[in-house]
Image 1 (cartoon, rainbow, N blue to C red):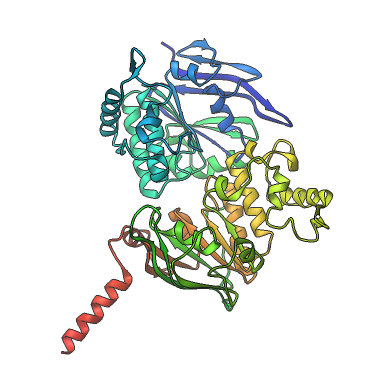
Image 2 (image 1 turned 90 degrees about the vertical axis):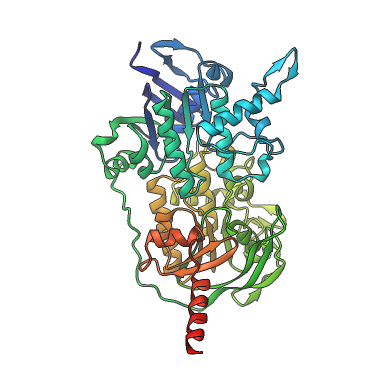
Length: 522
């Protein structure tokens, strides 16, 4: 039997204006976790899409267990026991968990669907691998982490033993990431082989056996993880040394830019409020981070702040203007920029070109329109400037359709558009989600540059490294309430974790101490 379960030999894949994969060779051993590392747009997802049958290569061959195979579509891949969890999940939101798992592989007898049999298999798989799900819940009502479990169960239901994970941790909380790493280790113990696309060097060092590095569509080499370091991997990936520390000068605080008073936001899925009586301020010249485990009200608060949703109580003031009931465009005109959590839903019009997306917030301004007509030459020049400044990679430059770009480059486009507006307040929600270390370094520098230029930044992040290194103040949110405020230089990750998990509450603990003092005085 061949040493390799999968071999992709000399694969070349081209799109208009770009060679996404240029003579790449990748070999996956039986029972290993093999990481695929590279910058945004390096060709990682394209290579895996070739293996899964979504794309056909111009050159190269694929072998399974030493035998050449032809994979024309995902059904061929599944027949070869190859499964894939995509970066942007392929789920039907109005279907239940169970329906999504069995879709395309429905058990039937004489044409009649056998759901009871399928339910039994799904429950057995979820218990065996620690992937607890509610089979009857609708996809639209469950968390992103739970949706990923559904995607993994889809692979296991089809008895796949070659598992492709495309950026699996980009949308997960730190706790969910730890769970996923453990699940991957368990898979390899059972003899399954995993291809793991990621930008996160810590995860590669923690779980992978070997790593193949791509840069600008070319193969840079394969290394054993035990014989390398994070610094060496980052150098292979971006071609230069990367700083892992965020450099910040002493802050110079200015006036209050954002004033949030007693904001309450109702929940759409249960009777309780999603955000409960939240108050805080952000001043010019500071970065304030709203931290917490996903699902504790951060999303709903940002929706209310940016005008995507209504709040039931409270007041929000931006640069002295009451924006509690203002329209989204009015908030933008008053000096707010928003890098949204969901880049596809709220950040881009996917079927618009890159240049159209880059002026979405400004196309009505005189520099981009004249008497109601778009000034295409000025839009093109502006887009080319941002593409160069932010290193946004796309096959056809400004005219590239946003949908066809890699997730990381879509994110760069949003960041470029929102920062270039020169806002008084930048609301940055997961701004580095899905970005490589070089791009993360650049985005962090941009956030700090906004702060140093005397602007206010509200950062919402699930990345503990980012929470500890970028902001000047940390506000922890738990079950819709602010439960603690910290200086990142004075708090530990462990203590922050206790507040994020609800084990501690600064205001409750202080109140209890005060009551104790009063009782002692009596």
